[in-house]
Length: 112
Length: 111
Image 1 (cartoon, each protein chain N blue to C red):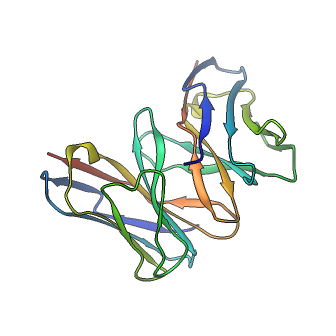
Image 2: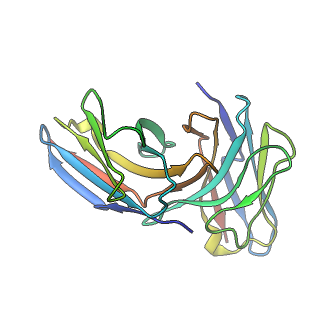
């Protein structure tokens, strides 16, 4: 099936610094790019998303960037806090068929 | 907040046994999904559905069947469970906004 590559798989950052997670996709028909956060023992929850008609979106400390030409998108968490420690998943979605393909995930650890 | 309920939450099965994981959503979403989550593999799509009576194969459908008898319910069926199917299974539903709402997960252990 269509692949979404997500890197890095593990990310350790100092509290207060920035964290960046990168994803790339294959399906040029993908037009919706959400990011999910999963706390230990819980289910994934949407934290931010971007659609193909945008290049940048920010919600508080979360910034997502989309480069459609390169088929890449990224999540940037500024001023990280211990509460940001979690698994993060990107996805690339073709809303023509709503086949939701996730990346393999990034385990973020914010060190106090 | 969308509500997606999975049952059972924990299941121990024997090799060769039949396992059914059930999912119910109360938000009238057309799309429903079954994923399995394993360390190092993230969320892998098993089956999905566009509505009652529809089932589609995901990326790893082998060894699994799915059933969507109604808008609200979507089941995942393992006819002959194997130890390799030991995993955490998540059901999710989604509407036209694209956002998925996940259930709490079902932990399956096949001995």
